[in-house]
Image (cartoon, rainbow, N blue to C red; front, side, top):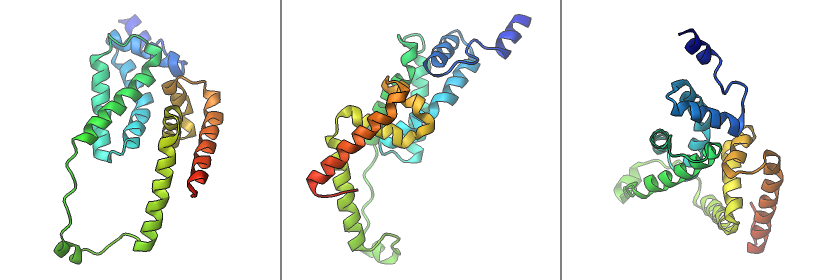
Amino acid sequence: MTEARTAEADPSWEGLRGPELFEACLEAARAGNRQALNRLVAELTPLVWNVARGQGLDTHSAEDVVQTVWLALVSHLDRLREPKALAGWLVVTARHESQRVRGRKPPPVPLTDELAETVQSTEPAPEAEVLRTERDQRLWLAFRRLPQRCQELLRLTVLAGRAEYRLVAEALQMPRGSIGPNRGRCLKTMRELLDIEGGSA
């Protein structure tokens, strides 16, 4: 009993970070350690959440995806071959689940003319909306022309922020110090694509 209390107070992952932390916690979770699983959830849920939101899901749908991804991990604890690649596995699983959820969302209910007349608009003026839409279309067109690696890097760094660069590095299997320079090159390429199209952000 004393040994169990000591192990719980001083777990094997204490002081670890990044892939080493995830590997140690995953191994402990496989052995039935609930504390280890809770640590993984606390560390990596922001990453899963950002992937789900990055796929265009609303808050409620993103919450469902996060829950489903963690349930999937629990059911695959003994089958995950590379514990250090856990973050990448979560990103891929979250992306697939988000796309599945997005694909089964019902289409929006059309607004009838009669109802539209009674609803006060909170949208910007039509002219401003047209300009904003055109700008957004140019941005997304340029974004989709980037290499897949750049798209993933920009999406994760924009959503996660600098505080989560270590998780982005783990998810993309890149050195943390290379995230910033690679992000800069991707943004430069995107600006060049925008210039070719005759528009800017």
